[in-house]
Image (cartoon, rainbow, N blue to C red; front, top):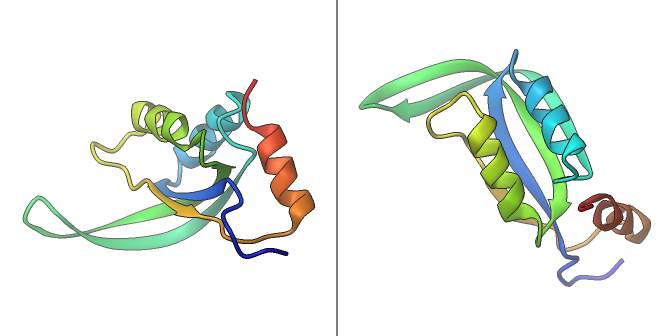
Length: 109
């Protein structure tokens, strides 16, 4: 495994538990990502509208390409029930080459 940019990113997105599967399926079916892991059961605490708030959420761990990240984030922002959804993209610096190639091959038309 190397130590440079792979062209892949992991996008983190929290969502209400009930909405998470629909969001995941929509972005995979649209070929905006290769895979979404939905990790339910999280409790988030955050600053919102001048006070600390909390929510029961699922974490979506989304694997896509750096090139496709903007389109993925735009679609998630359209579909997401939150006014300001968490969408954070992390550059993948290293990984199993066969897996990274599968991510690249899976994203797009």
